[in-house]
Image (cartoon, rainbow, N blue to C red; front, top):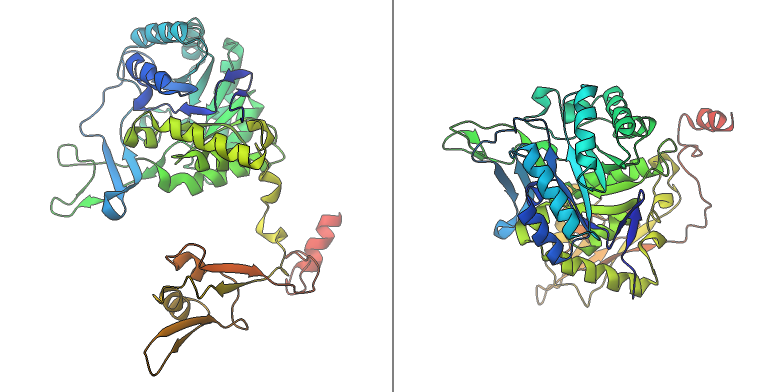
Length: 431
């Protein structure tokens, strides 16, 4: 049976599933319930200087799909609203009672070295396994010069990270904001400051929806609202891209990554790990479904690893990174064409409508004059292999994209004679 245990920047964990710094990790009661359910670790909800932050009511909103499925989750909650002393006491006791579980302490303070130098020894004394620097919170705290206000300035990221490395022996994980043009810049800065790892993504600036009667966005606080932090399954594609960008950047290659963003099942976790994450953090899925979802995550990941022959997490961590590249290096001579399995087709016509109205008019609708029966066939000469028909088809596997033997060798855009800069690009590469 597959071994789910990991070692992340020197920290041993019984499995790669950790709860992210958020309401589920705000107090000992929640954390103990999480450990009883089987989570390998937690990142304790962000601690700061006293007096503690004060939250508003209400705090959450959601972006819904069909049948009120929560696709995205928005919050305007701040860091812990409990005293630093109480949090430290609870962390100490929980770590004592659960020595085989990981406790990372999230921290957020103003950019003053003395404040970090004061709190770090107190956190270290709890027996915690590491710290996570919250440079990502997009609401409330940036207005105070913290959270994303730090994470968006690489110089600040490097500076504070270096302070922490000087004032603690614990591993330092830097949590990055997605509210930035290029996530590689703060990741490079974190590495330059001596970070042991980075975690990403934090939440994305968002407004989920409005009350059109009151003309105010949700969540509503006394007739007004504000932007919040967006998370949940909807942010997963953004998170995967940012994780991959750091994993394949030569300047941050080898820097351990804790993947965060829309992880709700074992497959999500496996995808993050395949793109370079050494462990994963979960929040929204636990808030929506409870802590016991980790049982299905562990079981599903273990079964998949057994099926694929992976004996450990490390064997497939980062395995998809070499296959992730810039667009200009993709094979211009590779070609796929859609193929419709007529036995599986339910004749709904969605592929035809999508292709006819918005793409390449490469699906023919054939109508039997006698019976009125419709049949859909791909015009291979017109099909460009865009995948739209496969995506719109409600029957999984009915439409497949079949590779074609073009008889042409690999050629990327920098080599393509249709590229007006091809010769110049090629010359630059040689130089």
